[in-house]
Amino acid sequence: MREMRRSRQLLSQQDCEMILKENTSGVLSVYGEDGYPYGVPLSYVYADGKLYFHSAKDGHKIDSVRNNNKVSFTVIGQDNIVAEEYTTYFQSVIAFGTARILEQDDEKRTAIEQLAEKYMPDLKEGRLQEIEKEFHRLCMIEVTIDSLTGKEAIELVRARR
Image (cartoon, rainbow, N blue to C red; front, side, top):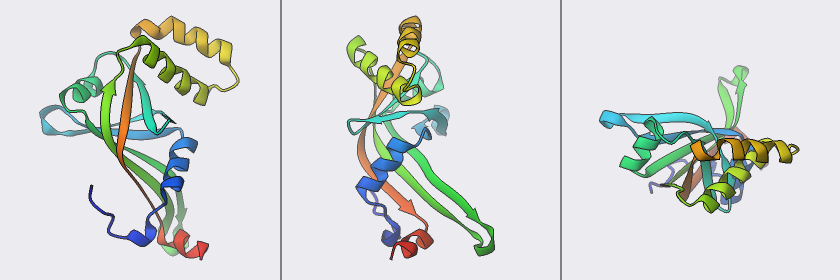
């Protein structure tokens, strides 16, 4: 993978993983139809060093993953506009990896339960019922991360010093 040009603004791996764990949405980018990139915002969970997404069993996203499993996933962890400085104090993470559609029921169930727990931690019974109701229509995608980098505004770097 390409090295980041402004290395002083590089986030640590620990900071990158924290952003992935704490946030709730990102943009999955795939090689779409007719050579166009396709970026789709979605909910996710980061667990055991991998990313997991749910999906319908067919559509643009699934077709794209089947045709080319190399993907990227972007999460904006912070984006504070500082108008008087004509800038934003941002933190963002980009993961590059390989996507795989989970075919085995046990791995699919583990992934959807982790995703559901992230968004509904206090509703165990309800989320398990919902999973059972929709399981036959559900598709889960796993992304094995090959490269994870994060960047933050230079102002945030300076503030830490």
